[in-house]
Image 1 (cartoon, rainbow, N blue to C red):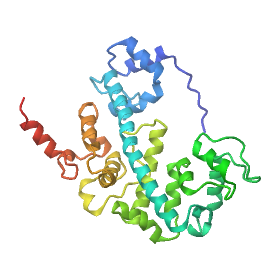
Image 2: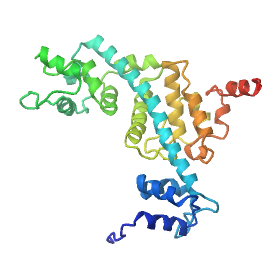
Image 3: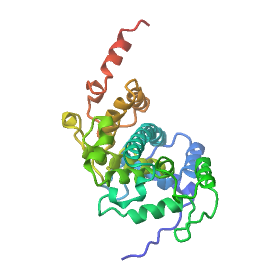
Length: 316
């Protein structure tokens, strides 16, 4: 394998490199500012769709400007925030139903017993992860320091048995990926169904959707590019939604499944309208690259056609 030998390029050199590839720079000082504070490498991911990648030097398409690229970058940042908004609503709701159903059925500390999980689930790893999160030594079962959550400290100041708090406290401290895997790994299909029924979904589909949502959540949490990303885990939509989606590994099917759940949690939500407004404010962004069909906003599923009709008929 060849050795990497590309030398670091100062910001001024980065700007000259962009100019040599045909990128139009409206304001050198502005471009230098953003190259310094965002980074050439980070911005380069947003440049690719404006470049002739079949040519060795990857020149920019004629007329491409630095502000166009910056616009896509800004859009992606807003898109991540918008995605996290819907993910938060879903995470809190599903987690609450999971905790309520299982604790009412099996008690406050049911998760300590591996019998409730599939044999292939690493229950020992779960307990170690919880102990680590709560600053508990896995051998001595003693805490090394206070936790940032007051309710956790209150439990340990008042109770000594069991050595871990009840499920509703524990789940508040666990990551989306950890508690959703607990749900997906429940031994009983009936138990999984108790939770899925609250969202009018098949239990196997809720498990798949949670894994897919967690994938997007991790991307957003690490401030990674979202807008035209192809996801490793594909999104399986409802049978009646298959005509809405033509790319199952893009942002659009993620939006479809999340909005499906959100409408059942909060029927009056305006998340879909904010998504439409976000896309409308950035004409340099091509929704097609995110898996959106050309007529997506006219589909009855989104309920946006009525809004557009009202807007057109409203008095000036």
